[in-house]
Length: 388
Image 1 (tube, rainbow, N blue to C red):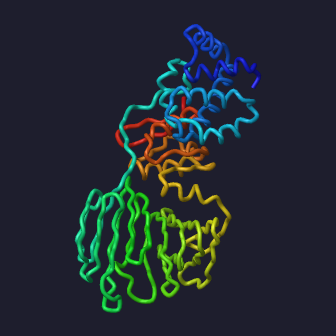
Image 2: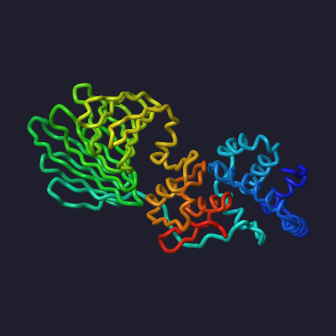
Image 3: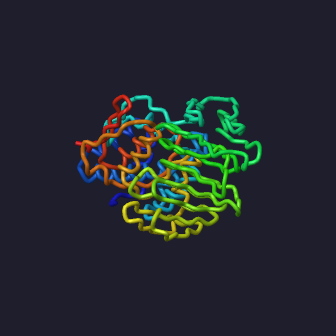
């Protein structure tokens, strides 16, 4: 970038809205002087947005946020990647909204996003009892007994939990099912003490009490499991033709894609296999097992598990992920439909993180500012195209 450090700092201050009227006019004239200057400005703006998008909400002081972002960006530019990572622990996430308010220039790279209210997901689920009765448990606080005497406790904050009564040998195997819609999430504690977190557009079918030599549950969508240890009764997770066997461990299973099922092991040990193959593949903590449903092939890789389980902790983490995959996740959580006017937009790749409960426009704003993609919100639909 062929500009002086002084000019670079002025451009950062311009982006942050910290210049006076005369300085702002001078910078605007410089940007519009030729295409080279415009490209320099766009590149610096992308750098700024990369830092902004990596932010966590650690500060609540606007002035400190401004000075922090400015201090990071005026460092030697060859170290920008390092500083953008450092920024993730020191700068206010909401600085994007401050940027929108303060940057009044008509030289903005793109048009503002429509002010349509799209809210993030929340605690939502429907519980199906063994009798076939259907209960909306999204905001419920109640208790009931299943036909085998098992207590079902429903809490609007902690989810649903099961307390077994009587001896298992005196019971028959009966099932409940939790269905989580788009724009929802829910948690459950099973009768053996196993804890399950269900992501949006997922469902779990399970015995109200585990009768017999195995604990078998059935998943669709995505779930995070903390399995209660029982060496005499293995826990079996069934997803289509996929079986995952554990005795006590923590793992995440993503089965949204019916062709490939992904399992990430956080701790413990699990074995996974396709029904009928007989071959079991063991995972170690920090490994991702991908099962191709058609061939039954299992590929195991060492990974950073944080990006795969971020949703359970209230975050989205994207690492060199294409826009189509990112928008599929956001569409499921914010319950919006996504349409593409240009298919090539789907393959653009981005990295960053955001809180699951943030306004989706913050993310769309970042993508627009750092790429040639344009978003249009219409009702509960997001239309994605290329800038003209």
